[in-house]
Image 1 (cartoon, helix red, strand yellow):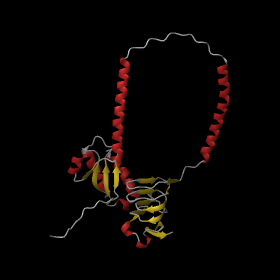
Image 2 (spheres, one colour):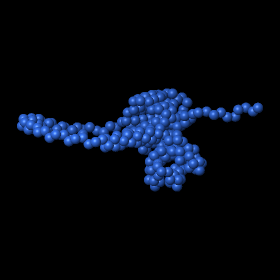
Image 3 (cartoon, helix red, strand yellow):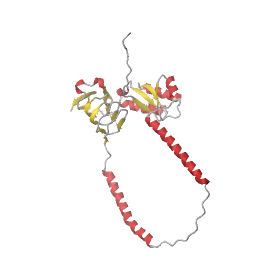
Image 4 (cartoon, helix red, strand yellow):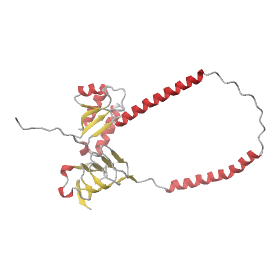
Length: 288
């Protein structure tokens, strides 16, 4: 009997999902081109899943055009994710099929709940309409309202109005003085499958970034814990951006599109408190 030549193992492998909200291929092409230009090396032969959870109804010719656009930018689609009706299309296109994500299932459950509630409300209204109309209430004369009450309202309205005017002036001054926040802060662990993006700002993670998680910032990234997932700084092309972490065990690090995967990291930097920066188009890793 020959020796066993293979084994089946379950692994958490990080994959990028391109989640689509429209089948408009022209807009998709323009937006994807702009995204790829920010980090061309990151997208080169990158495996990806086409997320079609929000697409209804599915148009086969449109999906084929979207796949063509993805491949045009050297991205490798490996699966379609969405409803059961995609199974046959995925097989026809020689791709894998993945059932809808958790958010889609939650939306479907919420929609079903709302339909049931609407049905219950309609039934209750129909039941009320069937009941005999109540007799009109007798016309009872009421005493006229005394004049003191409107006088009290008029007296109390004046200081409220003055306070409102003052508050408006103060708020205008406060808005002029307060600058918008320049840093996004996450205080909880970033777990597998999660993606955090700090647009036009730095990103601070006060915990760890787990395997399969992805943190992205147009500025610097500070991780006060272990980095096991992906960290992408300078996503919009900022070559001065840096990555800081307490323990470097990353699947991928990238600055302005220049990246290294775990196999390329120096052995003496693994597990160390590190600072990553870009020097002469190469990632340079220093211990802190």
